[in-house]
Amino acid sequence: MPAKATRVSFGEALEELGEKIRDIVVLDADLSKSTMSIKFAKKFPDRFFEMGIAEQNMIGTAAGLALAGKIPFACSFACFLIGRYETIRMSVAYTNANVKLVGTHAGIGIGEDGYSQMGLEDIALMRALPNFSVIQPCDDIETKQAVEYIALHQGPVFLRLTRQPLEDVNPPDYKFQFGKGVILKDGKDVTIFATGGVVFNSLLAGEKLEKDGISARVVNIHTIKPIDEELIIKCAVETGKIVTVEDHNIVGGLGSAVMEVLAENYPVKVKRIGIKKFGESGSPKELYEKYGLDPEGIAKEVREFLK
Amino acid sequence: MQNSLIDLKVIATKIRIDIIKMLNKAGSGHPGGSLSCVEILVALFWEKIKRTPENALSPDRDRFILSKGHGVPALYAVLAHRGVIPYEELFTLRKINSRLQGHPSRLDLPYVEASTGSLGQGLSIAQGIALAGKIDGKKYRVYCLLGDGEMQEGQVWEAIMSAPKFKLDNLCAIVDYNKGQIDGYVKDVMNIEPLADKLRAFNWNVIEIDGHDFEQILSALDEAELVKGKPTFIIAHTVKGKGVSFMEDNHEWHGKAPNDEETKLALKELEEELNELLSQKAEVK
Image 1 (cartoon, each protein chain N blue to C red):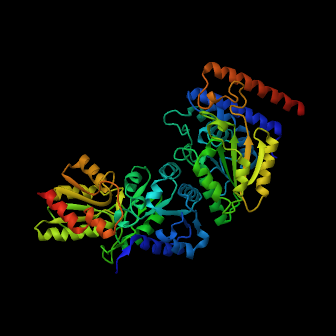
Image 2 (cartoon, rainbow over the protein chains, first blue to last red; image 1 turned 135 degrees about the vertical axis):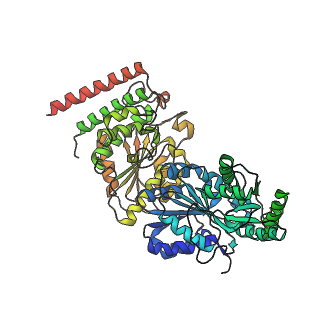
Image 3 (cartoon, helix red, strand yellow; image 1 turned 90 degrees about the horizontal axis):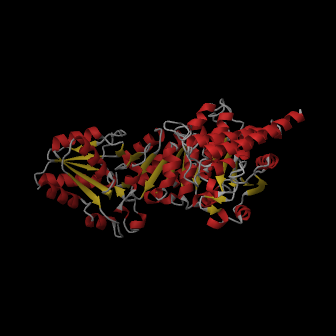
């Protein structure tokens, strides 16, 4: 399959699910062509609500729809959703409204638009809210299954998606399991935990390291909350050293989540790879090279870390 | 009307008595904005929503969202008088392990419909419930009570912009326009006038009433039900701290509980009023 952005996979999945699950409703804030909720909007115009550029009201309206039994997917860029954190906190989390927040355009991988449109702190914020689950799929098949899971899951969910196309990582017979990490490549010297758009690059980095004689295990963490504690501890026991890779600020993201588990259960050395400051404009390829999220950048950090 | 005017007045005074008792027991809370919205809540819960323990969570129930969450002592007292929560529970307000949180928590008490207290959010939630009602062809109506100071929040105006787009004639917003907020008069802190003109400009049906006059409240609520194709906003002019002379129109009583002495004085006034109403009622019979 050619590379596909997870937002595109989401749009296709939602369009299909709309037929099967009649309680699904979708809201967008003037970005339906970017979040790909447009596909659902065209097929089910009576169950799609264009809310204009007013994200707080979109999130609150989604909460009300959920309280009346609907399954609302409220879509925007991840950074714009978390900009309305207080509404998410009260109207969704503390109200325990069954709202699915879909934040696209995650990370520096969006490229030229620059920092203002990049979701770089969203995992940190959404992870802090009780009642919320946080999911970031890494390819087409995982996204589609995650969307179906989320629709049927009772409780608020934050789904983080990419603008840029992603290569397939998982096999055609893949089965998404909520809260479970996926070992993509085994290894004994180090474990690389990656999430979302950088899982594929981490896998390529693992292969590069193999050539240097470093046996790296690569694990896809699609469910960042609740995180797979058991697998993280097991990997620490078996490979000793741990690396995390994410297109997100290293404060509060996947790296922090992994370190929280290890610090409390089985402390080992951890290296966090991710963004440490604001993003900037550039092509996604140039940005991943500059910020060390390309396969060589990841491999280089791992080599340094293991020295 | 199911209840006579005098009956509604009696209920309102009993609710005010309970609000004072609850706040005194709690030692903190918001008397001003709880006392100002009593008639609005009584009119809604006794004449329109008609909440009972049986319909309290039914899918077809009329909804009430208290967007001005700090007025929740009034809502708890109403729920107790409607039999939805035990009367004795009122006096656990703000205490550890109580379902009666300082501001409404749906996690603790589902009958409040939504968690509120961070101002500006309730009208969006009410709009969502109204939208769902439209999709499903349900007959229920959705009421949302906002504070006047709350009208300064940006999210409120986002919702005011969107509800007419969706022609939500099953949605009725009410602002408890008691003129005060923590830092002073609304007109001085951040004037919201000309409020009726603004709301009309946003395509709402607007009704302006005395929010302590049951006949005006009920006639506005009746009108709201008849208006088709647009939502209704009722601007209810009220007095902050209504019913207790030393609390009326005094910002100091926005967020301060009465001590035992002040409680005694307040209850004396309210009980005199209650007795007066009861004797009027006896004369009518």
